[in-house]
Image 1: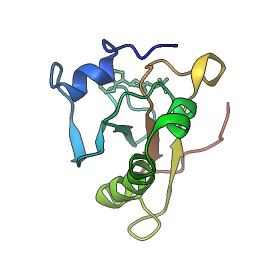
Image 2 (image 1 turned 120 degrees about the horizontal axis):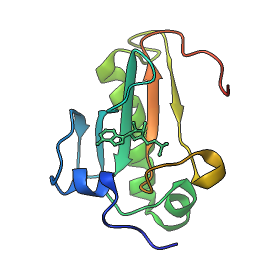
Image 3 (image 1 turned 120 degrees about the vertical axis):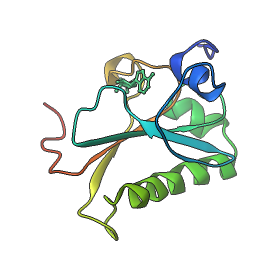
Image 4 (image 1 turned 180 degrees about the vertical axis):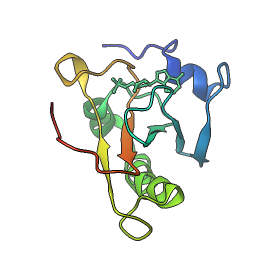
Length: 121
Ligand code: AMP
C-alpha cells in the first residue's frame, strides 16, 4: 500500500488544517484527538510518512523510532498522566483494517485522566 499524502494527519503536518497542539519536535507532533474517548485523549504521530506501525518498524530510522517512543512519555508527562506525574495511561496503536485504523498515518492514542477501563470491548 502506498502512503496517502492527503490523509488528515498529513494535512495537519503540512499546516493545512489546524490541531490543538500538545508537543512538537523535529520528529513527532502531538495533538488532542478531535473526538475524545476518555477525559484525556491525545495523539502522537511521527513527522515522516508512515502508514502504520509495521511500515514504521520496517522503514523508519532508529532515531525516528526512538523519538516516537520517547515522545509518548514526554507527552504523558506534559499531560500529567505519566507514572511520574500522575496515575498512568494507555498508549494504543490501531493497525490496519482488523485493528480498526481509520487514518492511514501511524499514530499512537494516549488515553488517561481517569481509569481507562477494559482493553477491548
Ligand atoms: P484510528 O481509528 O486509530 O485511525 O484513530 C483515528 C483518530 O483520529 C480518531 O480517534 C479520530 O477522532 C481522530 N481524528 C480524526 N480527525 C482528526 C483531526 N482533524 N484532529 C484530531 N484528531 C482527529
